[in-house]
Length: 264
Image (cartoon, rainbow, N blue to C red):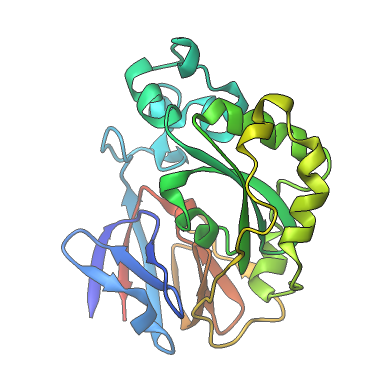
């Protein structure tokens, strides 16, 4: 079977294990059903997720020009402490920024390669944790806007990492931890204006089960710009990565805006 379309990040559904889906425009693939099967990936061309033109993708599925003008790629996306919609200050498109920033956000701890702090919209839980390949996660605070979440993350990352080691995550070099205990250690560092939003110390950890048949010992990332055709047997899906039998891993999200053909 052959499928073709522009890549977007896989959608997910919480389950045991997590279910992954890939929208290939005219086809909707249940990626879990491709486990233990040989898949061939062929890069065809680019298609910017904004302008739709065949222009080299710069970041987040956008070409260079669109990346620097689209509100979906503003600096506040990666640095939520820069959010200013609550002050009626526009970055690129105030109405869009209000719709995204002025809604409940959660600051959380996730364990994917190590304990890390992160921020996401409440509506994106547990999707955000799944995308990061976290096998366990817990909420720290729930606040009414992105700015408050951002300043909390800035304060906490002085004491805990805000990065995931993707290699450890994909080789499953991860230890189970008591996230409630880690959360209690960090409580004192939460900014004063955010303290009223602190979640109960004994809130429940969420455990996530990924569809991986076997974890590789060594991995190498597939770069579609350098290797435009690849085939291998799929043995796992974790985060937004496809894991292949030969140790090759493919980050679907990194290649949003690439038109590919998949042959199964």
